[in-house]
Structure formats: structure tokens, C-alpha cells
Image 1 (spheres, rainbow over the protein chains, first blue to last red):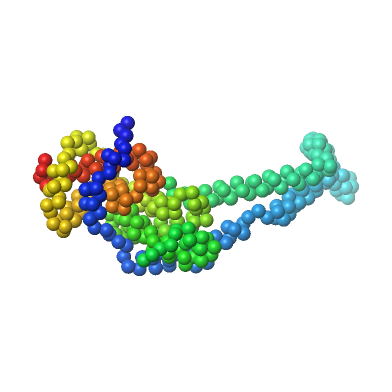
Image 2 (cartoon, rainbow over the protein chains, first blue to last red):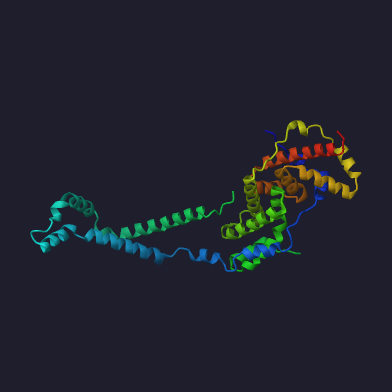
Length: 148
Length: 186
């Protein structure tokens, strides 16, 4: 590989000669034309406001937990039984119809315990926070701010 | 016109005074335009590219970490914008053959050039630089005319510093070879 030290490219004669080459300048009013397309309002303000907002993530986490809590506490079997009773003998017996599915769900959800709700809030909050960060990073990458 | 440090304008812009960006444009427009015009060789296209580069830099200003010099960072944006525009038109960079760059005589060339009048020297160098491929023309301008360091040129063009040195070394030889031919010295 051909490696050159700076002394092999330093050349006062060539430097002086190249300096004499005509400099082509942008036309008059170039700065004004650039400034016309530059936003007058501060676009960086929005980015600053988008910092970490604990209440925002806490609200979403609480909502998420509320939905999970509803799903866990909702007794589909009892619900179907009530429906069957209200419809009388001619009603469809949903308990028998979806027996296998209901049993599977019951087994799955019985593994959740209400004592772990605080842990769930923390976990869901953390997941939401980092998920949000990842999404923003991805969106930013797609916005083509790279110049390479 | 005396300009303040780039950091002064950058902080003002980020803090909401977008009109302060005009200071950066005024300070760097000649260099940004030079980079663009050397690559695309068309005044109107170069202005458009320079304007585009300034706009891109403005929108990315919040991401500018200040690790690099603002000027180098901006020139890199201008260089990439110009190169990507040129690629659309299949810009060709020449390969310098070793045969072409051998056996030059700096003394002989410099004596001949110094015998010329100032205007003749300007015409000669303009004519030679015009014949150079875009990238070589830019490298020559950045290093010898604008006295940018190897490190800065490396950051602007994305070439390694050794690569920049090799290109400049070959380019220097080529210039002597071209000057020899121009003055029928060979």
C-alpha cells in the first residue's frame, strides 16, 4: 500500500498556483434564499418537550394493568351460565360449546396472582418506556437525518 | 465581515433564534458552494445543492453533538448531497495511471509558470483544473487553495486520512505532468 507522508504533498509552488484559480461564488441573495426555507419558529422546542414524562408512562401502565385486571377477574364461565339461564332451555349452552377453550384460559390466567400487580405495573411501565424509545429511534432513522 | 464562533450561532438557533442561522450561512456559504460546484460543475445546480445542504444541516442541528467541528460536519453534508446528486447523472471519477504521473520535474515546471504573467497563470490553472475530474478538482481546492487539513478532508469526503494523502500525492504528480504538457516541456 502506497503511504505518503505530508511532506510528499506539501508544495508551496502548487499551493500558490492553485490559490490563483478563480473562486466561483454563490449568487447575490443566496443567504436570503436559504433563510426563506428555514422555519421561523423554533423546531427544536418540540424535541425538548418530548423528554421523559413519568406521569405519561404511569397513566399508560395503569391503563394496561386495569385491562389485564379486568381480563383476569372476568369469569367467562359464570357469564355464559348467566346467559344460558336467561335464555332458558332453548338457549345455546356456551359452557359446553367452549368447554375446552375455557378450561385452557382458566388454567393460564390462574397462574397470575393479584399480589404481583405492583410488579406488573413496573414491568409494563419499563416495557412501554423502552418500546417508546425504540419506536422513536426507528422513526428518526427513517426520517433520513443521516448524510452518509 | 467578522464572524463569531460557530458555537455562538448554533446555540442561538437551538434556543429558538432561528434567524441566527443566517450567520452560519453567511460564514460558510462560500465553502459549501465551492464543494458543490466542484462536484456538479454547474452554478445553478450547485446553488440548489448548497441550499439543500444548509436546510438539512438546520433540521439536524439538534443532533449535532459538537464532537466534530460544525464546519466539517456541514461540509460533509454538502459533499454527500453533491455526490448523491452527481451519482444520479453517473458522475465519473478518473483513475490516474501510474504511467501518467512518473518523471515530473518540479523546477522545470515552476520556472516556466513563473515566467508567465499573472493573468496567464490564472488562465493556465483554471484551464487545468477544469480538465480534472470532479473529485480531484475538489481535493486540490480543499487542500491547496482552502488549506483544509488532511483530517478535515478525510471527515468531509469519508476517505481515510491515508487515502486522502495518497490521492493528493498522485494528484500533485498529475498536476506537474499536466503542466509539463501544457507548456510543452515534456
